[in-house]
Amino acid sequence: MTIINPSALLTPDGIVTGMAVAFDNTVRAVAPKAQLLRDYPDADLLEHDRPTLLMPGLVNAHVHLEFSANKTTLKYGSFIEWLYSVIEHRESLIDACDRDCLDRTVRTMLENGITAFGAISSHGTDLEAAAAAPQKVVFFNEVIGSQAAMADALYADFVTRLEASEALRRRGFHPAVAIHSPYSVHPALIKKALQLARTRDLLTTAHYLESPAERDWLDRNEGDFKPFFNDLLQQSYAVNDARSFLELFAEQPTLMTHVVHASDDELSLLAAGGHTVIHCPVSNRLLGNGAIDLAALQRHGIGWLTGTDGLSSNYTLDLFEEMKIALFMHSGAPLERLAQQLLNSVTVDAANALRLNCGRIAEGKDADMLWLELDHEPHPQTPLHLLLRRYPLLQIYIDGIPRKGARS
Ligand SMILES: [Zn+2]
Image (cartoon, rainbow, N blue to C red; front, side, top):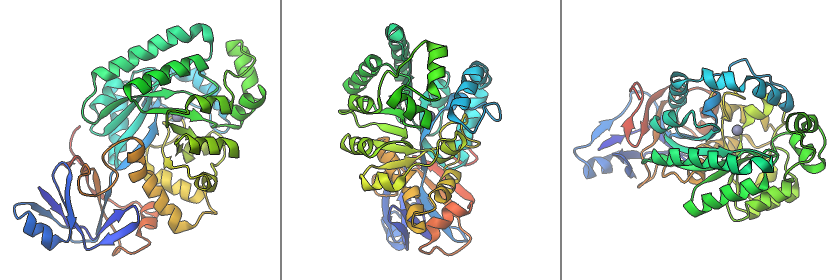
């Protein structure tokens, strides 16, 4: 048993002082230090000579490990130009991200305080690295393919990858299902994959209404996607529209990533379906997709998380950076409230959405925690400063085990 006596704890409602935390693999008690020392006289007591904060480990709900070799290869600024650059360089980028590259990426996330993540796997080349990661992982096997004639073969390939991930299932590694997007997956394929997910009670995710090009294509079979589908796939119309796609998920609460260009009606459907949105601010900016309307999500009562997306559309996998960017992107939102919402979006809300028993420092939760050294005595605006400044991480715990400096 260990007791940490920080200057403050971060909770979903802000900063709490005067409380210490007793934990082994899970949090056993949150109470004043004197009480914990009475209850657990043999515990190791950890204190620090400067102000500190104990907060939940960060949960990155959306990342693509397989594209981690990208630095400056892919073209930023417009979604469709980026997509063409992905198609041109996909093979070489995936080949370049060998096991070393994958392990480094996982390690970087850990060093940035990310103690759990949701990985979207398109090819399964990241399976072994993800399964060996020290973090908790939800491993989303992705299904993609808009041509009906290919549906059976693509479904079979998806099932093979899903079974390979099931074979590595362990505590903290959870196979799951990703549907790529409304423009790229045939409804027959979506139905089969969702049926399998429901039968096995697997989590599901999808990209949804990311770009203006997607909006134009789904609504009118026009825009930047038209030459893309005409030339590359000999396809002249979208296989789903925005509404019919969502209707396929009516019985399956799903993590919907991006949702930058949803209408009021679609937001109502997202709310009715119990779906959760994953906001990836850096990716949206770099691919020219604009900024999500967080106030509209909140009006509709839709929960939202913050994720990094992959290094195919980001320069780092760092949720502190991502939250800071979001804080400035949504410049009309009340400052302190948005800061706390962003922190919740990568802790308690993300853990709940990924069905992980972490994200809060509370009795019975897994002891996934970050212990930070502050440069001030904690006060009500400390959550805001967590986003503005980069406080040193004294220790990172996953299941109560110190991970900083340890080799994974
Ligand atoms: Zn993505």
